[in-house]
Image (cartoon, rainbow, N blue to C red; front, top):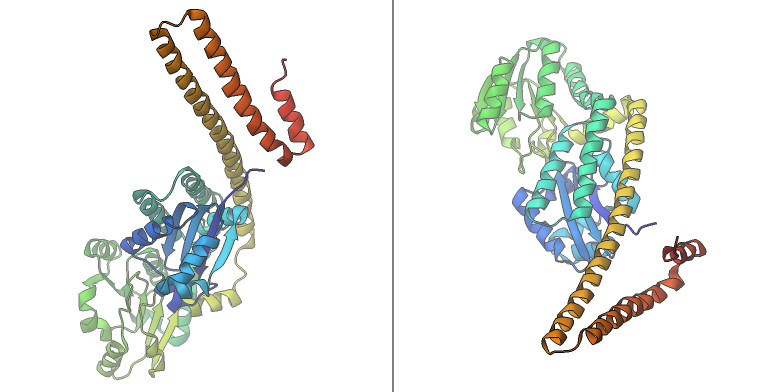
Amino acid sequence: ETKMTISVIGLNHKSANIDIRGKYSFTSDALSLLLRRIKKVADVNEVLVISTCNRTEIYADSKSGYRDIQNWLKTEKEYQSFTNHMYVHQEEDAIRHLFKVVSGLDSMVVGESEVFGQVKTSYKIALENKTIGSKLKRLFEYSFSVAKNVRTNTDIGGNAISFMYTSILLIKKIFSNIEEKKCLLIGAGEMTELALKYLKSNNVNDITICNRKEEKGKKLALENSCRYYHLNNLSNIIHEFDMIITSTSSSLPLIGKGNIENALERRNNDSIVLIDLGVPRDVESQINNLDNVYLYTIDDLGEIIEKNYKIREKSIEEAEEIIKFKIIEYKNWLAENNSTEVIKNYREYVDDIAKGIVLKAKRMSKNGDDIDSIIDYISESLKNKLAHETTLKLKELYPNLDEDKIQKLNNLFKEN
């Protein structure tokens, strides 16, 4: 059994609430800095940090497992609260956890596909900062092939839909005549695209898209015959809408209590439904205290879904089978990688010895030593260095080996 030294320390939507998750949702610059700082921690060989809206996870290959990193987090003021909400997985459990994350099995919206892209981005950032080597590179490459496999061969992706489905159900409970209502969608990602599908199938046609990146927002609006406004116009238009669905990766709330108070005034207190799928929050939580406003966050929806749906267990089982096989493949790769490392080291060791001996033999030849004494020197030195040193090293190994391994070693040098 080869020694694996892979671990993950993380927090996610199960271990930490939306505000804590928001605090540790990093921009790529902040992520680069964090990677380089963790890489300097004593026994850490490789490190990669995944940061998505619903999780922040530190993957490491480290001699001391996760303890060094955990201790470092505790001594850094800004990360102390991280350790109050964290979970730890080691070795095979860490690998299984990553494979589940990247295939959407560990997401709040089980089967959502955005996490795949987010993990790929985190992987690129680690590559750019040179904080990963062969072990984690290979692990993450395997994880991407797991995700593709799960996406292609199971029906897991159907679950992202349940979030949007639930959002629309809630809106319909509040507005009986949903088709007459005006809807504002903030953001232009997967959730917005799903919202468009669901709204249209419920005959909601008055839809406006609001997004910071103009190109993406305009394109989506054009394809779905919606209006488009830049996010800067939000406060001027927000009063026009009965329902607002927002899902951005903004680090600060986009909609404050003041915005909604003004909107209510201009609407003569007509009801507004807000579905906030952003993490960190897109909508200030104080809005909950206003009359005629219905605000649901991603956590509220998650609770409703858990009560209402037994998520497709068959898909999950199929996905877990795929994961099981990939873990075996990765462990085989690790074992092979370890043995090739031993061989590579041994070859280098022999090369060094040979080089030294050849240099001395050449000097002897220059000094006029006769060929016999040079050959004797070469033969004696090789025997001594290779046999003597290697013997000592083998002797050191013996106490740690069981019968079976000793037998194998004994047979290594027998003539066939």
